[in-house]
Length: 282
Ligand SMILES: [Zn+2]
Ligand SMILES: [Zn+2]
Image (tube, rainbow, N blue to C red):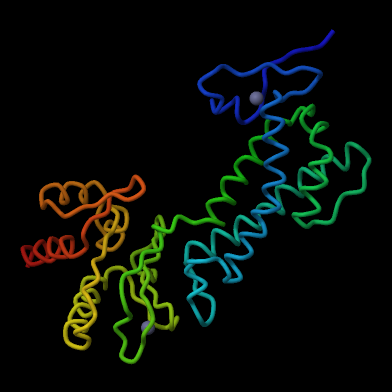
């Protein structure tokens, strides 16, 4: 007689099954067929994501901040930190599950590389799916995959090109590195050509004005670059709660545009608004 139970897998637990109740399992497994397949697929994907995160770190990721950055380590940049962190977590989490499988099954543990660990766990996936900790394994692997995707393929909107570096003789591009929970004095605006050219977010208003005047004075052929920022970017650049940003956007009728489901505000409208507010306070 086949023993059936409710699936403990990540897909069933988080309702990723299209609103249905948890599926039933059979044959002693603690995961339904769909969650078991996700576990196996997740392991295979992790091997790729580990490599992709390595490319982000090594500088080969197209469009990444790192690629266009020369010089030494830049502390606090979101993509590098996330990619390094998620790679370390992959080794740690996969190593821990491999250790459990190896010990309980009397197998030789694989080398602690993500390729070897994911291959080993993939070969033992059916055994793991029947283990008392199958639900935890399913959840941890799914979270690793999500974190790996975010780190390997960072949202390009999070690295916003602000314009050309205003340092004399520098032709680098300035990028806003948005980091959740960043301190006000953390470098948030970095030049792609010279790591020493960096500004904190509270210097942005002055910097932005000097970029505009440099453009008007020096290079008449250069078209004015319109900059567009999300509410989160604005909150970070002007150290203002996001709720206030939305209120000001609506009151001030900032020009806006939508791209990929996100709203972006015209940076010069934003800057004018904050300049007026600063002037009103003095
Ligand atoms: Zn399931
Ligand atoms: Zn520069």
